[in-house]
Image 1 (spheres, one colour):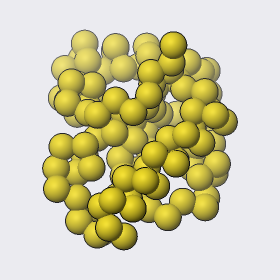
Image 2 (cartoon, rainbow, N blue to C red):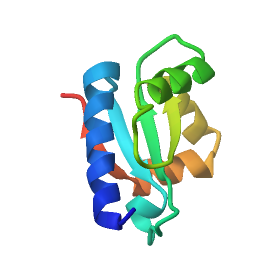
Image 3 (cartoon, rainbow, N blue to C red):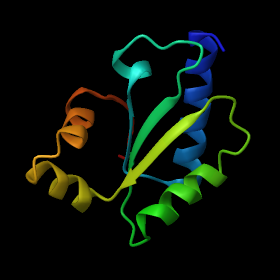
Image 4 (tube, rainbow, N blue to C red):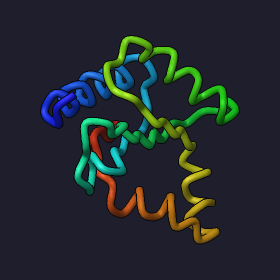
Length: 108
């Protein structure tokens, strides 16, 4: 898949997540956000959603609504409280996504 077609697919996927999952925020991280994606690159999505569901159930729910995708995905779903906690604990990974990731959507 070319980088252009991959970006179109990421946009389509983002639209579906917004419509069906209604998150607070979606952030693209990894090679498509701040690197040089290759034909084998996956899309890395960090989703923030107010929910009481277990983390594994959240990821599974998003994954199932995107079964027809044409690009490999790495999906993370955190609550706003989990994001705050991870940053306060010094989680470089989450902090880096929040600071350097490409924001695809913010709920208004």
